[in-house]
Image 1 (cartoon, helix red, strand yellow):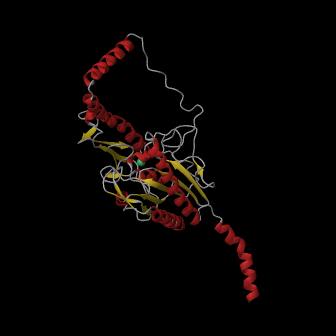
Image 2 (cartoon, protein in one colour):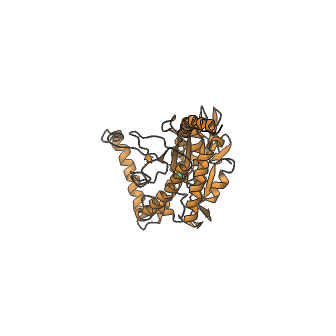
Image 3 (cartoon, protein in one colour):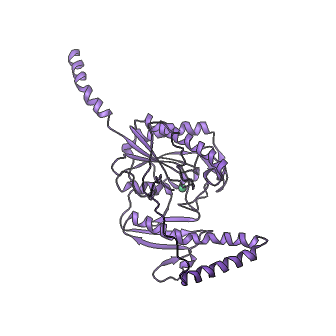
Length: 351
Ligand SMILES: [Zn+2]
C-alpha cells in the first residue's frame, strides 16, 4: 500500500508541477504623490530637480517592496508602467533601478496612460503604487488627472486608481493592490478585495503625518504577496455602456466659459455628457479638461498684475496679440507645422 501510494505520488508529481507553473503576470502602475516617507509636494515635480530626485528614490523603494511581495506571492512576471507625468522626458523610475526581472513598459508611439491597455491579453492582475485621492477628498495632492478636476462616472466621482481598474475591467483583469494615503483608502472603501496599504496620513493637500517607512514597506511586501495569493477573489471593475460622464471643476480650473453654450449640459462648473463606452468617456474628459485648464491663466494674470512692470507686460501681451492676428491675416505668419513626435522617441506612459 505504502509503495503504491509512493508510486501514485511520483506519477502525480508532473501534474502538480504543471499546476504550479501557471503564469501570473502583474502590471504595476505607479503615480508619485502617495509615496511612503513623502511630505514635500516638490518631490513629485520634475521642475524641482533636487526634491524630485528624492522622490525618485522613494518611488524605487516603494515599488521594490511591492515587486518583492508580488514575486513572494507567486507572480511569474511583473512589469511597471509610469502613470505619473512629472514632466520628465524619461520615466520617473530610472532605468535599471528595479529588480532585474521587471520590465519597464515603453512604446514607440504616444499612448493614453490609463486607458490604452498594454498587451490586453497578457496580464492577470494590475496593481497601483503611490496613488493619491480624488479632488475634494482632502488627501495629499488630491486631484484627478490634473489640478482642480473631478471625474464623474455614472453619478460617482472616481479616482485615478479607479480609472486603472475600469480600464482593465474591460478585459476582465482585476486591480489587486493599491498604496496611498488614508484619504485614498477612504475613496476606495467600496472595493474590499483590494489589498490597500496606507502610506501616510494626510493633514492637508500639502502636508502629512508620516508613518515609519520601514514598517510601511514591510506592509507593502506582505500585502502584495496576499494580493497575488488571493487573486481569484478579486473582481474586475465593470461599467455599463453607454456611460454618463461628467467633469466637475474647482479653482483654479474653470468651465464657466461653457455656461449657456447650446447643446452643452452645464451647471455649477460641471459639464455632463453621454459617451458610447468607458474609452469614449475618457476622451471626453480629456477634451473638457483642456477647456477647464484655461482657468489656470487667472493665476498668471494675478502674477503679472503684481509685478512692478505689470502694466507694461499687459500692454506688450496685447500688442503681440494684435500683431499675431494681423500677421496671420496678412499671410506673414502661419502656425508651425506639428512636429513628428514619434520619430526616434520612446514613450513610457504619462509623458
Ligand atoms: Zn495621479
